[in-house]
Length: 355
Image 1: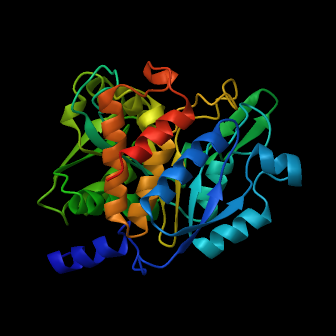
Image 2: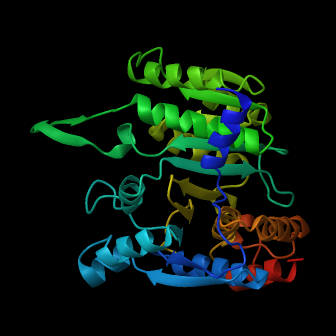
C-alpha cells in the first residue's frame, strides 16, 4: 500500500466523519444505571457549555429498560442508534454469572463497533504510581472469548469458544496503525499469547505484521500478554499504542487505567464504519448512586471524544484542557480522587475553566 492509499484508508477510518460541523446533530443519549444519570448529566452540561449544537435523543438501556420494557436493549433504543449513528452512554448493569447478556457486548456486535479505544494519560493533581503516562489501548471489539459464545457440554462441564478471524484481526490492526499515524504516535505494540495459542493468536499476529509493513515509519513490536502486564506496571512510558484482541484488551485497558488514577479519569469509545458509541468505562457504582458524589470526569472526557468524532476538535480540546486545569489545581476533587467535592461542584468547575 503506497502513501496515497494509506491516506485514503486513514480518512475512511477517521474518527471525524464528513458532516457539517455547524448544524445541530442528533445524538442518542443513554444515561445508564446506578450513577449513570449523574455522570452523563454532568457530561451533557459540559457539552452544552461549549456551545456545540446537540439535540439529545434520550433512550433507556440496561436495568432501567429491562424494568420498563422487559428487554435491556429495546427496539426503541436500536432504532434511535440506527437513526443517529452516534451515542453517549453511561454505565449499564451486567450481572455476574446470571441474568441477561451484557448490553455493551450486544450493542458492539449489533452495530459492528469493532474498535474500542481508550486513551490513558496522567493528570497532574491525580495521585497515581506513575507520571507522564500517555498511551492508547486499541482493542478488537467483536470476537474472541469476550464475545460470550459458550454452552454446557454436560452437567459440570462448560465450553467457551475463542474465535479469531483474519477479517477482524486485519481490520483492527489497520485501525490501530491509522490511529497512530493520525495522532502522531510512533509505535504500535501487538499483545498476544501466540506461544500457547499458536493458531488463534498466531493469526492475529500475522495480520498485524502484514499491516505493519504498510506503515514503515511507525515502529512495530510484539509482546506476550503476561510480559506486557509486567512491563506496564514497571515502565508504562515505554508504550504508545497497544493493539489487542478483545479479552486481553478488556483486562489490560483497566490495568492501564490504574496507572493514572483509576477508571474515573479514563474515557472510552467504540468505533465502527458507520457509527460510534462513547462511554465512561467504569461501573454503575450502585452504592453511591443518587448521592451526588460520583466522579463525572470519565463521562465528560468520553463526551469530548464524541465531539472530536463529530468534527468539533476545538471543543474537544477545550474540554480536555478544562478537566486538566481542575485536576491540576486540586481544589475541586470528588472523594475517589481524595477530595470532598460533589458531582455538581466538579462539573461547575470544569465549565468555569472552558476557554
